[in-house]
Image (cartoon, rainbow, N blue to C red; front, side, top):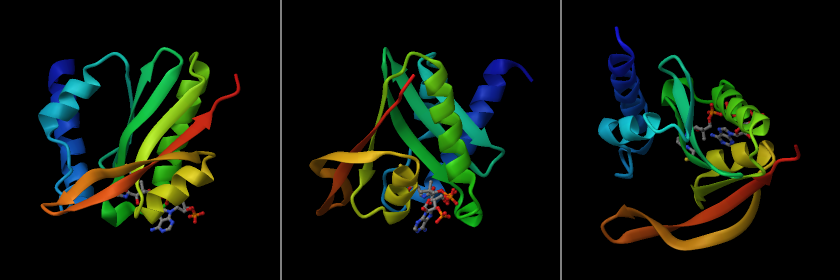
Length: 148
Ligand SMILES: CC(C)(COP(=O)(O)OP(=O)(O)OC[C@H]1O[C@@H](n2cnc3c(N)ncnc32)[C@H](O)[C@@H]1OP(=O)(O)O)[C@@H](O)C(=O)NCCC(=O)NCCS
């Protein structure tokens, strides 16, 4: 299998995982969008077989966690912790000084995971996520300062 085919398959796997996590909220990513991300050289991706993945974008000295998702059957097994740690370590080896992310204000699991790995809340984006036709939810903005 060539690299192009590998990436297409990876994007389809990620799409399936993302749909299981965000499909209900209508905010899951399509495989073509994921493929465009993982084809971009600024994107760092980590995954654990077909159990979960995490994507980050590094721009200069700043990085952003774009998304992460663990298949519901494999949640609470330490995989999210492992993947996020891998991304942080990889960014730490680059010139990155700060990692940012947004997380829905009602996403307790996400907020706890990010807090556990040293992210601090520093802002809020009001009505950031459209979760149904007439309901929006705030996003917490969190960051982690890296000491190189
Ligand atoms: C958030 C998510 C990535 C966590 O991944 P995970 O593999 O289940 O998490 P882990 O097993 O590595 O747990 C690490 C820590 O996260 C927190 N956590 C994870 N799931 C939790 C839950 N359901 N409730 C409360 N805290 C939770 C805990 O602090 C946990 O540490 P502990 O086990 O010592 O208590 C996963 O629940 C998920 O994919 N959710 C749907 C998509 C999503 O919300 N993505 C993140 C926002 S973009």
